[in-house]
Image (cartoon, rainbow, N blue to C red; front, side, top):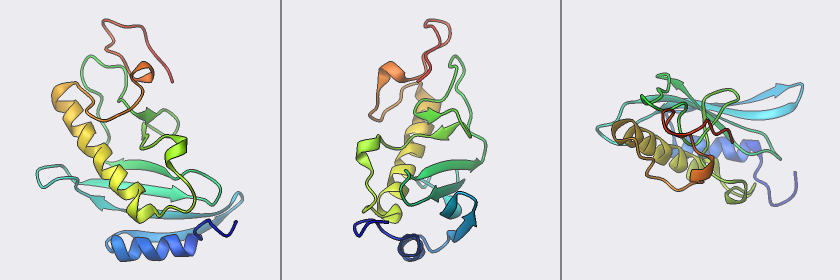
Amino acid sequence: MNARERSLVYQLELMKVHHPTFRCRIVHGIKGERLVCQGNIQPTPISDSYGVRIEYSIGSRPRVWVDRPKLRIRDGWDRIPHTFREGGPRPCLFENQDWNPRMLLATSVMPWFLLWLVFYESWLATGEWQGEGHPEREAKVAETSPEVRP
């Protein structure tokens, strides 16, 4: 870890302060240590509540999952926009250049996650992804476009 990176313990403590209902722990494994945080979030007062998980290891990008309810694919689509296939579908919250190891999960990844869920719910209702992104890499309507895989 270089001096600019935030330690896993620091990230854990800030998650406790900003998101006290989340259960966070540092897991020791074959690939080293990682911070795992789990909890429930509700992006808006009229939204569903989602059981979510964030995992982060020093030197890697944070990874996020929606554990429950299971994410749904809108009729006519082959996949959910802004998701990774592996471990998934797993939300894609940001581009590589948007994250740096000095950032705090509690004040960057968590708000991005909430916003992603708002866009997801809007997409389920309208068929349009309201967030930014790379449309050329997004899921296309199955009936009118060939399958596009990022």
